[in-house]
Length: 114
Length: 112
Image (tube, each protein chain N blue to C red):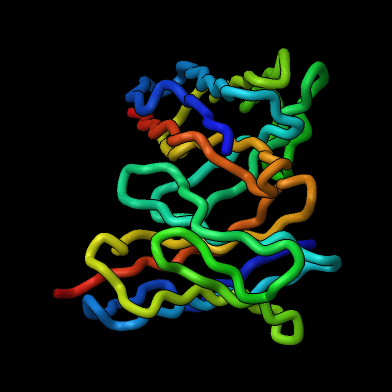
């Protein structure tokens, strides 16, 4: 299946700052998603990254806090804005591999906010 | 709305013993079902999937799962566990848009 390169793999950030996470897919994908995994928790969908248009956010997530870009079919970014310690999580992007009927994931970004 | 329940938060199994992880889902149409494994500090690796056809599916690392529509279940099994199987296991449900809902996860500990 396709491969997603996600970076950074981890970061420690000061509260009040912003971090942008990038995901690069080695082939074109129709759908890309961003998930959050809080410590000891499962994955929660943040938003669907739509190519060429505004992302579609799930309940509880807003664009001002998590702006997302998707300029083409192989790349997306998620920004975590005005960070607080509660934003400390693993953030993962995923894409659809319709040829193999599966959703595949990047390795994740482990964010710690101090 | 789609949802997934993994009733077992933590399972401890002896090396060489069999393993079964439970997964129940709620979904209005034909579900796409997935099992993923996450080792410490790692991303998600797909073990197996079901979306149609044979209800017993084989995956990587010797895992298999059986889709039972009448029970809304998709339990994961492995006949003989290896120490390297110690990890977090997630069941997920979605549709052909690949937007997934995940269960809470089951942590598997393997004892020697």
